[in-house]
Length: 147
Image (cartoon, rainbow, N blue to C red):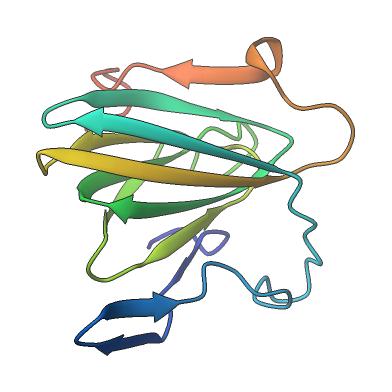
Protein backbone atom coordinates (compact mmCIF):
# COMPACT_ATOMS: atom_id res chain seq x y z
CA UNK A 1 0.00 0.00 0.00
CA UNK A 2 1.46 3.36 -1.02
CA UNK A 3 -0.10 5.24 1.92
CA UNK A 4 2.01 5.06 5.07
CA UNK A 5 -1.12 5.69 7.18
CA UNK A 6 -2.85 2.56 5.87
CA UNK A 7 -1.87 -0.86 7.20
CA UNK A 8 -2.55 -4.26 5.69
CA UNK A 9 -2.41 -7.15 8.14
CA UNK A 10 -2.11 -10.84 7.29
CA UNK A 11 -3.06 -13.04 10.23
CA UNK A 12 -1.56 -16.36 11.19
CA UNK A 13 -4.11 -18.97 10.15
CA UNK A 14 -4.33 -22.43 11.67
CA UNK A 15 -5.60 -24.86 9.02
CA UNK A 16 -6.42 -28.53 9.17
CA UNK A 17 -8.93 -30.91 7.61
CA UNK A 18 -11.82 -29.27 9.53
CA UNK A 19 -11.20 -25.77 8.17
CA UNK A 20 -9.27 -22.85 9.59
CA UNK A 21 -9.02 -20.67 12.68
CA UNK A 22 -7.68 -17.12 12.81
CA UNK A 23 -7.86 -13.89 14.76
CA UNK A 24 -9.72 -10.93 13.27
CA UNK A 25 -8.20 -8.34 15.62
CA UNK A 26 -6.07 -8.23 18.75
CA UNK A 27 -5.48 -5.16 20.92
CA UNK A 28 -2.06 -3.73 20.27
CA UNK A 29 -1.99 -4.45 16.53
CA UNK A 30 -2.66 -0.77 15.85
CA UNK A 31 0.93 0.25 16.64
CA UNK A 32 0.15 2.44 19.63
CA UNK A 33 -3.09 4.06 18.45
CA UNK A 34 -4.99 2.27 21.24
CA UNK A 35 -8.10 1.98 19.11
CA UNK A 36 -11.29 1.00 20.86
CA UNK A 37 -13.57 -0.57 18.30
CA UNK A 38 -17.19 0.19 19.06
CA UNK A 39 -19.19 -0.58 15.92
CA UNK A 40 -19.30 -3.57 13.59
CA UNK A 41 -21.15 -3.85 10.29
CA UNK A 42 -21.43 -6.57 7.65
CA UNK A 43 -22.09 -6.08 3.95
CA UNK A 44 -23.11 -8.90 1.63
CA UNK A 45 -22.94 -8.59 -2.15
CA UNK A 46 -23.06 -10.70 -5.28
CA UNK A 47 -20.68 -10.86 -8.24
CA UNK A 48 -19.99 -7.63 -10.16
CA UNK A 49 -21.51 -5.38 -7.47
CA UNK A 50 -19.53 -2.16 -7.25
CA UNK A 51 -19.65 -0.42 -3.87
CA UNK A 52 -18.80 3.26 -4.22
CA UNK A 53 -15.95 5.04 -2.48
CA UNK A 54 -17.06 6.19 0.95
CA UNK A 55 -15.49 7.27 4.21
CA UNK A 56 -15.40 9.94 6.89
CA UNK A 57 -12.94 12.08 8.82
CA UNK A 58 -13.67 10.54 12.21
CA UNK A 59 -13.40 6.74 12.17
CA UNK A 60 -10.68 4.14 11.85
CA UNK A 61 -12.09 1.17 9.91
CA UNK A 62 -10.79 -2.37 9.78
CA UNK A 63 -12.03 -4.10 6.60
CA UNK A 64 -12.00 -7.87 6.19
CA UNK A 65 -13.45 -10.11 3.51
CA UNK A 66 -14.97 -12.99 5.45
CA UNK A 67 -16.20 -14.81 2.38
CA UNK A 68 -15.40 -14.42 -1.31
CA UNK A 69 -13.03 -12.12 -3.14
CA UNK A 70 -13.07 -8.35 -3.60
CA UNK A 71 -10.92 -5.77 -5.38
CA UNK A 72 -10.71 -2.99 -2.79
CA UNK A 73 -9.68 0.58 -3.68
CA UNK A 74 -8.47 3.09 -1.06
CA UNK A 75 -8.57 6.84 -1.75
CA UNK A 76 -6.98 9.65 0.26
CA UNK A 77 -9.67 12.33 0.69
CA UNK A 78 -7.71 14.58 3.09
CA UNK A 79 -7.57 17.95 1.33
CA UNK A 80 -4.37 19.01 3.11
CA UNK A 81 -2.52 15.79 2.25
CA UNK A 82 0.25 15.54 -0.37
CA UNK A 83 -1.49 12.36 -1.60
CA UNK A 84 -4.97 13.96 -1.82
CA UNK A 85 -7.18 12.06 -4.31
CA UNK A 86 -4.51 9.45 -4.96
CA UNK A 87 -5.56 5.82 -4.74
CA UNK A 88 -4.20 2.34 -4.29
CA UNK A 89 -5.74 -1.10 -4.17
CA UNK A 90 -5.56 -4.42 -2.35
CA UNK A 91 -7.18 -7.81 -2.93
CA UNK A 92 -9.18 -8.95 0.06
CA UNK A 93 -10.41 -12.51 0.12
CA UNK A 94 -11.33 -15.36 2.39
CA UNK A 95 -8.20 -17.30 1.44
CA UNK A 96 -5.45 -14.83 2.38
CA UNK A 97 -7.52 -13.28 5.22
CA UNK A 98 -5.76 -9.92 4.77
CA UNK A 99 -7.28 -7.06 6.71
CA UNK A 100 -6.83 -3.38 5.96
CA UNK A 101 -6.97 -0.61 8.56
CA UNK A 102 -8.14 2.73 7.15
CA UNK A 103 -7.46 5.92 9.07
CA UNK A 104 -9.82 8.92 9.14
CA UNK A 105 -9.97 10.81 5.85
CA UNK A 106 -9.49 7.74 3.68
CA UNK A 107 -12.32 6.14 1.77
CA UNK A 108 -12.77 2.74 0.24
CA UNK A 109 -14.83 1.14 -2.47
CA UNK A 110 -14.79 -2.35 -3.90
CA UNK A 111 -15.82 -4.65 -6.72
CA UNK A 112 -17.04 -8.17 -5.97
CA UNK A 113 -15.10 -10.73 -8.02
CA UNK A 114 -16.54 -13.96 -6.57
CA UNK A 115 -20.13 -15.21 -6.88
CA UNK A 116 -20.87 -13.80 -3.40
CA UNK A 117 -18.85 -11.90 -0.80
CA UNK A 118 -19.22 -10.91 2.84
CA UNK A 119 -17.33 -7.86 4.06
CA UNK A 120 -16.86 -7.01 7.74
CA UNK A 121 -16.31 -3.41 8.87
CA UNK A 122 -15.01 -2.83 12.39
CA UNK A 123 -15.03 0.88 13.33
CA UNK A 124 -13.37 2.89 16.09
CA UNK A 125 -14.42 6.49 16.72
CA UNK A 126 -15.17 8.87 19.54
CA UNK A 127 -18.58 10.41 20.10
CA UNK A 128 -21.53 9.64 17.88
CA UNK A 129 -21.38 7.34 14.89
CA UNK A 130 -20.30 9.29 11.76
CA UNK A 131 -23.53 8.65 9.88
CA UNK A 132 -24.51 9.84 6.40
CA UNK A 133 -24.23 13.58 7.20
CA UNK A 134 -20.61 13.11 8.35
CA UNK A 135 -19.51 10.87 5.48
CA UNK A 136 -18.12 11.59 2.03
CA UNK A 137 -18.59 9.63 -1.15
CA UNK A 138 -16.74 9.72 -4.46
CA UNK A 139 -17.77 8.19 -7.75
CA UNK A 140 -15.55 5.33 -8.86
CA UNK A 141 -15.18 7.04 -12.25
CA UNK A 142 -14.41 10.54 -10.90
CA UNK A 143 -11.97 11.97 -13.46
CA UNK A 144 -9.82 13.46 -10.69
CA UNK A 145 -9.06 9.93 -9.42
CA UNK A 146 -8.31 8.21 -12.71
CA UNK A 147 -9.25 4.75 -11.48
